[in-house]
Image 1 (spheres, helix red, strand yellow):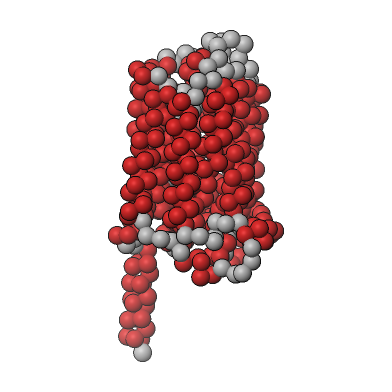
Image 2 (tube, rainbow, N blue to C red):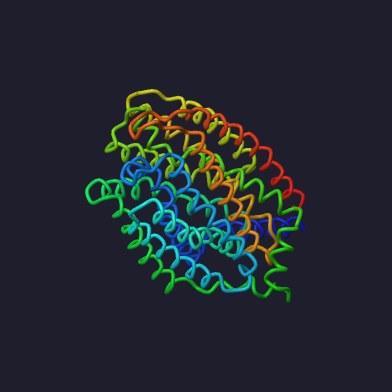
Length: 421
């Protein structure tokens, strides 16, 4: 009797270990989604290091630049809402390719822009398509990976953020310095085209969710997803999670150049080392997220981020190594928030609602970020093109307060998940 129990326990343990390992196809999907995210994140991230160049080249004020940043976010939010009702009605691979093609076209238009209005319009087009890609990718991850695997998956896929800083941004800045800022967007177009072709031929259709669909219309599916009380706390937590970053990030290069006296041609070095720190910490955070309580890990990362944000936003002219050190620790804290929070939020929706939930969630996240970018552009003042930015420290304090609120919101999400299990 005892021997049989031991055998059963060993079998269960072996099955559990096997369920945590990735198949070869799952590894392929992780790589493809990471590459997709790399191009989308690079498109968004590159605007920050190019901020000072763009404002001077196109004669943009801080308010206009904030509006250009928010154009992508708000149009992405609106697009996500419109797509939410249909997100669970079609093969996720087809949806992913459709919106990715639109993203490539919008990025091409950005490279062709020659004024504030044309750049604004191109950002709107890119946001309509690019803003939905993240939610579709999240739905695919949730469909193909268990909750016990998602921390590692999120950690790897979100390494695209670090990859964009290590490879994308330095190369983009090098191209912008030698061939004009437009060449950076052309580089993203070429990369995205190649990745899209690989997805077309290597990814299998993702259709299991179609078997769970009920005979309700796309609009009613959207309404029922929004009305779900358990989903709302996930929406609010994700929206607030993005506000601080959108408020601060677009103006960091202008702050470093004009306030901290870092030369424009040395910005790439800062982003390179920041990316290296991120790419080291992401897999570690992903593994920790699957082993320990995700909310505790999120809280630790949040507290680190608050301390470093306050230090960063109050910088005066200092050696570049000080900026690099603060930036590296800051992004370690930020990554330690993103991975567990994303993994927790992915467990909120029911399988039949995943696509719609992810679309609405991404929409609110993007719209909240767009509003934050406009708000940041209003608070920050720059008297001339080369004068220091004023009130940058105020944004740091506001962002710290938002992070504290997020700790409470993610705690609520964690309780929802634990109550089910």
